[in-house]
Length: 325
Image (cartoon, rainbow, N blue to C red):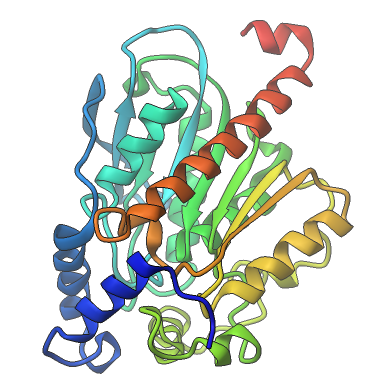
């Protein structure tokens, strides 16, 4: 049997005792409400920071993209920002589910965070989520007045489906932005929609995210689209050379563990500055379950120390005039 942390086992036992069908046995709206209810039960309280406000970002097809701004200080000096794409299999999840996490990232890093509420499937199938995240990142990089300070660099970040989106944004935008992508943070990312061996089998059921759930998410999001498309499975991009410095975080009991490991290995093989961190005995979804899994808070803070290292290194390597900006 694999190692399971005691606090993880406590939460798994609590969830197993809850009545009702599995998420993949219902429709998308029911699943969204289930995620909201679970977050209300087991997420940590939101910390106090200087400013939290909702935004509307111009979307790629004329629709506004809802977003939420987090600032730990009201200073107007130029500074970088994290842009966060939430998880939920491209089908569930929203700004409120990730509200506490984004505020904690902002507080600990002392960096502006912008959380993106991209369009969800099955109402908006692939590549709608990718289009929204690319548009939102481009918007942020151009220092919109709504942020309150000039943007000197961006850090795409996200968990699960959001990790997929962060990887795709970094691959797609690269040098096309007016400011550098300083680093990317991929939290137990889904980067290979064709994965069906290894951890996808070993942890197929009983560890919160299930193989059946992943199949349900993929079907809703991808429809008849090619699962090997690099915007769907960024692991299968021809090359990862030139990607920004990357922090990859995986969990030992996660069906997606092996594809996160593979992405980190491919980055390292391509010469990309990469920090790989794995939480033994931890489950998928843990960064938004910190009230129910206290050790997940320690995992989060360890990630944030690593991310700060990558961002500081990237800033130090910029030309002097960009550092001063």
